[in-house]
Length: 414
Image 1 (cartoon, helix red, strand yellow):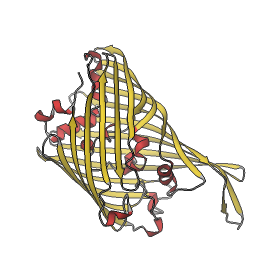
Image 2 (cartoon, rainbow, N blue to C red):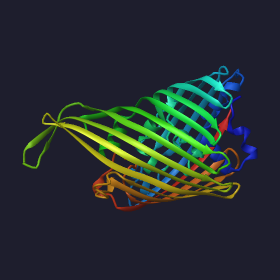
Image 3 (cartoon, rainbow, N blue to C red):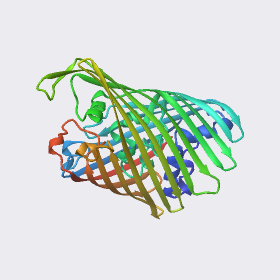
Image 4 (cartoon, helix red, strand yellow):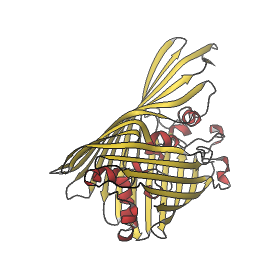
C-alpha cells in the first residue's frame, strides 16, 4: 500500500511529521521502499496543497518591486498522484502552479512525472529505476522542496538550494538508478541520475547573468549527479553526500560586441558554463531538537570565444548553512539558521551579487494536521543567488536589508 501523511497525522508530532516528509518526500520515496511487498491499488492516490503568502521587505525589493509595500504574489497550488500498478511498477507525478512575485509566473507546470520499476528485491536490499521527469536527490531538502510543510520555513536556504533555479533543481528529464542497503553498521541509500531540464530562458539568464540579454537564450540544462545517504545503526546522526554537475546550453542568437581596454571593439561569438558542486550534509536528530549543517564546494568553468580566440576560466566558490530546529510545543516548530555563500573564493566579497549572508528565524504553527501557518524573517547582507525579478537594478541595491514572509498552507488527500 502507499503510505501517506493521513496515516500518521494523529500519532506524531509536527516535528516528527516534518522529519518524515523530508526523509521520504511523501509522494515518491517512501512508496519506492515499500513497492516490492505492496499489493496493486485499484485507484490512484492523490495528495494536494494550497498556500497563500505575504512577502514584505525593507531596504530592498525581493521577488517583486511591490515587496516593500507588501505583496500577496506568493502562493502555490499543487496536486500529486501515486499509483502502484504492481509490486514492481509505480507511477507518480505532480502538477504545480506557483506564483513567486515577478520571478515565477502562476502557469501550471509538471514538477515530476515518472515510472518507477523495482527490479531487485532481496530482503532489505533493493534497487530500481525511475525514468521520465524524475526528482533530483540533492542534500536533505531538495527532493521534498515542493511540499510546503517539509521546508524549514517559508523558503529553503538560497546558499545551497538555489531558489532562482528552482524548476531546474526539483527534477530531471532522464533516469534515476537507485538502491537501498541494510548493512551491519547502518542503512545506505544510493542514487545516480542524468538527463536534461528545460526552464524559462529569462529566469536562467537572470540567475547566470544578473539580467536578460536579447542576444542570449538559456532554455535547457544538461545535468547529472549522484547522492549517498547513510544512517548509522543506533545513532541519531544522518550523513549525506551529493554531487551535481550543471551545464546550461547557452545560445548566442547573434554575436555580442563590447568595448575593450584599448578603446577597440571585441566580439563575443560563444559562451559556455559548467558547474560541479559537491555537497556534504550532516544532521543530529533528537525528539525535540535537530541540528544540521550543509556545506558545498562549487567549481565553475566559463569558456568564451572572443575574436575567434577561446579562453577557459575556472573559479571556486563555497556555501554553507548551520541550522537548529526546536519543537517547544507539539503544535509548534521553530528554526534558527545562518547561511553564507561566496561565488569566488579568490575575489572575495567584491560586489553584492558575489556573496550573501543570511540570518533566519522561522516558526510554523499547526492548527491541525491539515492546516498550518509559517512565518520567516531574514536579516540579509548581499544579493547573491536571490531570484531576480524583471525590474531588478543592482545599482540601487542596499548592502543590508531584510525580508519577512508569512505563508498559510492547507494540505489534503483523496
